[in-house]
Image (tube, rainbow, N blue to C red; front, top):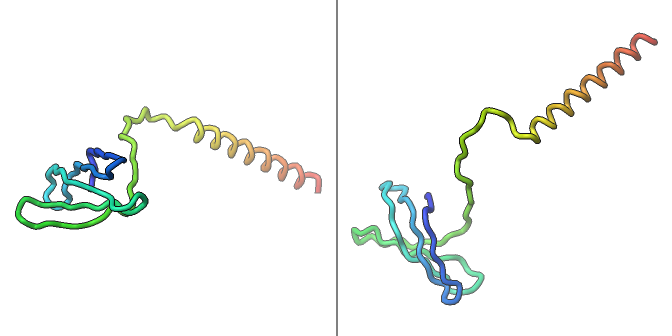
Length: 102
């Protein structure tokens, strides 16, 4: 399910969510509520055809919008790549020196 909107009143623990229905692919809004302060968020969804679906939200994941990539790796990737290359060169030169002396 793709959540596209959320309103929530913390005092009365009621709100609404707008989402893209995974079965029909249409945007829909439904009411949500919470019986206790730390309880699950309950969903009462009517599909418009008389079918009411009851459910609750167990977990949610936030995703950032997709950014257009510049094609250049991030700085942390470049630092790790450079450090790894440096360590390989140092270890390689140390091994080649120790094999010459033995």
